[in-house]
Image (cartoon, rainbow, N blue to C red; front, side):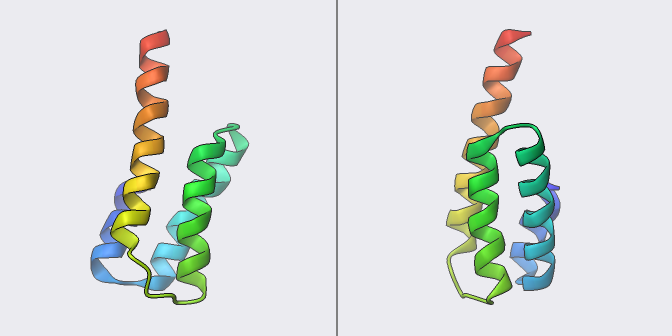
Length: 77
């Protein structure tokens, strides 16, 4: 879903951005991944009110949170 979100940002499709961010937020919350959920929530809120924020920056924060989780997870396996 992260890739779908990034594609939606490229397309500037606010509905898709909000939808994908919402999906990521929910999945992250269910897994207890607070940093990822918080980053996705910021994106979702901006897209829902159609703010012209810098979604590339917001997505980079989300990607960083995801990459940090992934790296930590892989190091524990």
